[in-house]
Image 1 (cartoon, helix red, strand yellow):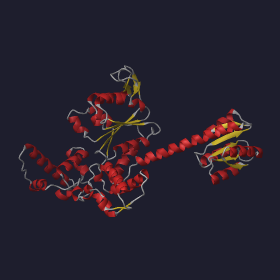
Image 2 (cartoon, helix red, strand yellow; image 1 turned 90 degrees about the vertical axis):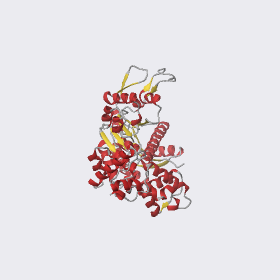
Image 3 (cartoon, helix red, strand yellow; image 1 turned 45 degrees about the vertical axis):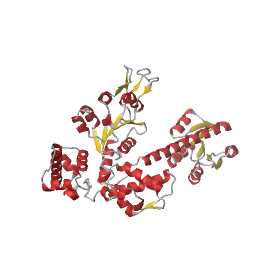
Image 4 (cartoon, one colour; image 1 turned 180 degrees about the horizontal axis):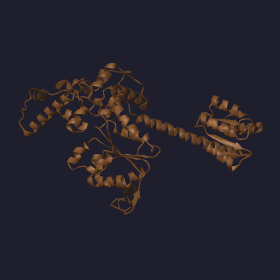
Length: 475
């Protein structure tokens, strides 16, 4: 284990010699400086792990040296010592960033305890910083497409506010990443980010999970439980798959948004909470409202800032960047030798439809990284589904849903006839013809067409997928 490097800045040679013997006996590496300027030079050159700093020195005093050390390296712990210790000096040193203040004459054990505490504190901060960086890499949004840039622009506007955000998009597009990015860039970033998957919790338990319960409030409630909203107090709660909440739970969530208070199951006492709510769903909540499955008032409370995350097939330019990012990430994560990927394989991955979006791509890259025998991933190494032309986007224009149109559907639209044997077939044929006509009128601009026909863009994409409509085959 490498030795910790301790720099002692003190104008008294006897003090430096005494500390040298003590520190070297304890296994530390010692550096000594007689003046403030000499100490700053050594600090820059030797990169110590900790500085012991005297306050009263000729020329530059310890407080000024402390300020310069903090400016040089904010994470460097500094323990200040003084033979003229006063409360005001200790307070000033602490305000300037000193970890501890020790009065002379001091016992060796007092110095060693302070050093150990300071070094432990720095190590914890460094580990915390490393973990946070690892989390940021894991939840990093990768891409340079116009669609993702629009999402990031919306995130940048939403993050500093306390407004509720509703993130929509297909399964696997990265809605959680958007939520975490909002929290990470918000004023609440130092507080907790609490995630709840509303679809994964049984209906009879979700109220207890969200709002908590008192002991004995129901069978099996043997202990009091603090709910997720209370846990997220002063922070952010992320309600994933919010469209799967029951009507009763929706009413209680609405109350939290309106009143800022929760009530545990089995308790009549209300608890005030300060929580920023971010929700996400892959459902079309407007359609769910029409079906009576989702409360309209809750929808409007959640969708103060709506953010639609486009599917991966709409941003094929991001595929290569994502592939390289995940190849590097999984090489480190799985302790596998880094591999290269051929341009032909990248092109094939870029043409694939990715029905599971970024999640499917991530899993595919991890599998390729582990299972490919050679140093280069090429087309033969790709899964059959990726190599099959039937699953490619078809090379349509940007914004098109792509895909291959079946001969039956193409002939129906192209001829203008509606050869249908059932009422359902007739309705589907008529809807397909209507959508193709509107897309042509609007130059195959998905967003504009969705606005013109009065439907969310996500719903229009589902229709394009359902009827296999593409500019290549229907333009």
